[in-house]
Amino acid sequence: MSYQTLIDAADLARLVEQGDLLVCDCRFDLNDPAAGRRGYRAGHIPGAVYVDLEQDLSAPPSGTNGRHPLPDRTTFAARMAELGVTRTGLVVAYDTVGGYYASRLWWMLRWAGHGQVAVLDGGLEAWVQSGRELEQGDRHAPAGDFQASAEPRMPVTQVEGIETNLAEGELLVVDARTAERFAGAPHPLDAASGHIPGASNRFWQNNLTPGGRFKPADALAAEFRQLLGEREPGTTVHQCGSGVTATHNLLAMEIAGLGGSHLYPGSWSEWTSDPRRPIAKG
Image 1 (cartoon, rainbow, N blue to C red):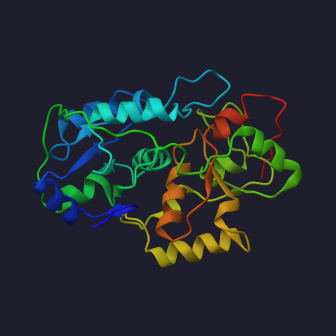
Image 2: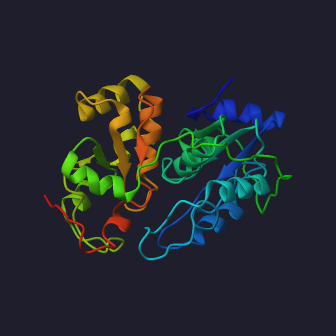
């Protein structure tokens, strides 16, 4: 089977037994960057390798390019190959917070040209609830042969495009942060409060059921169609605080059959690094 968005615990367990994939544990905590690896070592899906948001999925921040800037595609692909990603092998990403971090790896691998990558629906909890065991310690996979495609496979809009859109209004900017942060409530991660003028708000957790699984495709499609109105997905740009939870909305749109929308990687943390850029509240 081909997996390009989600995989459930039962299918993953079957593939783990066959050994025909690479499982990536993407746990992370913005307030305690070492917590993800500690949790991984305490117990992870058998065979899973650890992928660190800041070390593996981000370039060093400069102070003006956001908290989690995208690395160079070639550099990223080389790092993924070191971790065990092959050109054709399935990659499954998971975390413990509804896909918050796993969707970042999903999007980046798709962006780099990988065709077979999915997020474990329900994350580690779904695996444990299915009665399956965990493995402790570190695990390292043999190096893979993955290389970046010649061109990005997922579209990106940089800050210049967002600035131009303030006047032109051709793009729908969708902010994945909470409604409170979007409206202007102070938050320790935000250098300034509010949102990009003209943006709409779609909190990433609205993609999930109360049980932490993604909503059915038809439900997601209806909700995003209401948000988009008459716009096509390709005129939509997703952002958040630093380009992480925005990928959750991108994944949800792919599940809904509404592919083609863009990521603004620098997001709010980049936007607010320049005090000349306007801010809206409310």
